[in-house]
Amino acid sequence: MSSRFALLLLIPMILSAANSTAPAISGVANSASNRAPGLSASGIAQGSIFTVYGANLGPASCNAVLAFPLQTSMCGVSLTVTVNGTSTAPLPLFVYATQINAILPSLTPAGSGTITVTYNNQTSATSAIQVMNTAFGTFTPTGNGAGQASVTDTNYNLNTIIHTLHPGDVGILWGTGLGPISGSDGAAPPVGNIGTPTVYVGNTAVTPGYAGRSGCCSGLDQIVFTVPQGVQGCYVPIAVQAGGDVGNIATIAVSAAGQNTCSDSVMGQDLINKLAAGNNVNFGYIRLESKTATVAGAVGAGSAGLGDFAYATFSGFTPQTAYFAEYGVSTGYCVTTEYDFGGYTATADLSIFDAALDAGSALSIEGPVNTPGPFAPLTPGYYYLYLSSVVAHYLYSDDNYIVTGPGGADVGAFTATDTTSIPSAAFAGVNANQTIPRSSDLTVQWTDGNPALQNGQVTIGGFSASTDGSLYSSFQCTGPVTAQKFTIPAWVLSTLPPSGTGQSGSLTYPIGFIWIGQYNTSATFTAPGLDRGVISDVFFQGKDVSFQ
Image 1 (cartoon, one colour):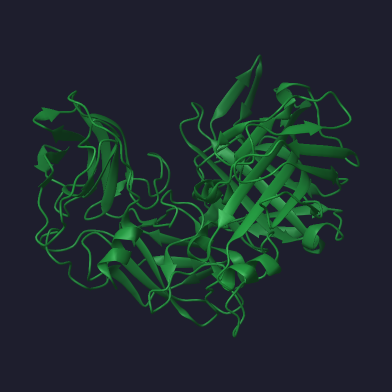
Image 2: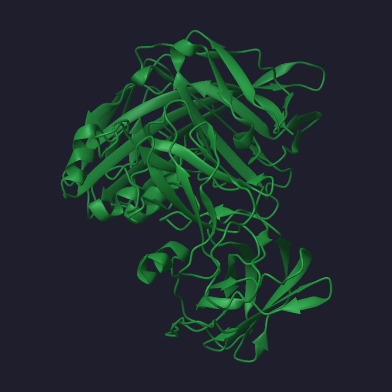
C-alpha cells in the first residue's frame, strides 16, 4: 500500500492560525471514530492514533516529514499523558493550530488520566483522557467516523457505490485501536494478529482472516474479512466489536457478482451509472418529516409530542468522491450515528457536507397552514427548518407542499412540489416508557403499512441521550413493510448511550424514542445545475422508551 493512501486514511488536515497564547484542549477522541467520551469504544486504546482538538495547539503549518523512528515532538509541539502516576510521550503525526494527531504509546497504563500539550514552551491545562487496552474505530473517507467506511479491495481500491464488493470478496477495513504492541510504536510496526475482534457485515458476524497493524504505518490497523453471502446494497452497515465494545458503524457498498455498481440509492441507478462512467453528478434531496411520539404520564396518562421538520441537501459528486453519496441504510439493516443535525438520523447527513452545492441564501416552504418563513443553511448546501417552532403542527398528510429556492452560485432557482403520504404503519407491542435492553436483540412489530410507497419499505428510527445531553446517538433501520416485524441487532443497540430522564412539570420521561414510518415515493424537480432533484416526505409514529 502506498504511504500516500495510508496518510489519506489517517487524518483529515485542519489548518488555522496559531498565536502566542498557551494551548487549550477542547477534546480528545479516537482519530477514526471520533466517538464522544462515554459512548462505547470511545476511550483511547494503547498504541492507537488519537486526536486532540483545541486552540493554539501548534503552528499554522508544519512541514515535518514522517520517518521511522517517529519522534516525541514535531514543529515545537509535544504531548504528555499521565495515568496512575506514570507519564508517557505520544508520537505526533500531524500538528496544527486546532488539531494534533498522535500515537498513544502502547506502554501507557490503562485507566483515567490526563493529557497536556506543550507548544513554544507553553503548556496547556490538563484535560481528561481515558486509556483503554482496546477501543477500535473505523476510519471513514469523510474523516468524521460516519458514512462510508474506509474499506478497500485487495488491490487497495476504495469501496464506493461505483466500485462495489461482492459476496465472497475479500475486503480490508482500516481503523485504529485494536490494542498495544510489543516494542516501540515509533518503529516500523510488527505484523501479527491483535486480539480476537468480530466484524459485523450487514447482519452477519464475521471472523477476520487478519486483524493487526498495517506494515506501513504505526498505529494503523487493518482487518481482512470476507463479505458473507446474502449481503447486498449501497449502504450495508459494517462495524467492529473488539474488547467487547462496538465502535462507530459505517457502511460499504455490495452488489451481485458481475456488477461494479449498486442499485438502491435514492439518487437513481442512472446517476450512479453516470458516476461510474467517469462523469460528475449534482443531486438535490428535499425531505419533509413529521414525528409524533406518545409520552407516558406520571400516572399512566399519555400525551403526544409533535415535531415537523424540513431538510434539503444539494451535493456535487465526482467519481473520486463517490463516497460522499451516502443516503440512509439499505433494506434489512441498521446504522447509528452520534451526530445530530436538527433531528437527522441518516448517515448521509454528515457525508454530503463536503460535497455541498450553493443553492441560495435560504429556501422557503408553503403549505395549507401559515408559511413559517425561509430556512437557511446550517452549513453550505444543507438547509434545515424546525417547522414546529412556528406552528404547533405544520405537516399534514395528503396535502400539497411547495419548496422554492432563489438559486445560488451552483444551483439555479427551482420549485419542488410534494403531495404528502398518508401514514398507516404503527408499532404493535411497544409501550410508552418501556425499558429496552441495549444488550439484547429487539424485535419490533407493526400493523398496516402501504406496500405501494417507496420500495415497499418501513423505516424504524429513534435516539437515546443522556440527561445532560452530552451523549447522543440516533439509529435508522429499513425493512420490507410486508414482513410486519424487524429485529434490531444487539450490537447496534449497544452503541447507544443509556437513556437519561427529562422533566416537564410533574412528568418525568426517558430521553429515548423509537418510531416507525414510510417514506413517500419521491417526486422529481429540476433546477439549473442539477442532474436531478427529488422531494419526499415521511410521517413517523412512535413512543418514548428507555434504552438501558
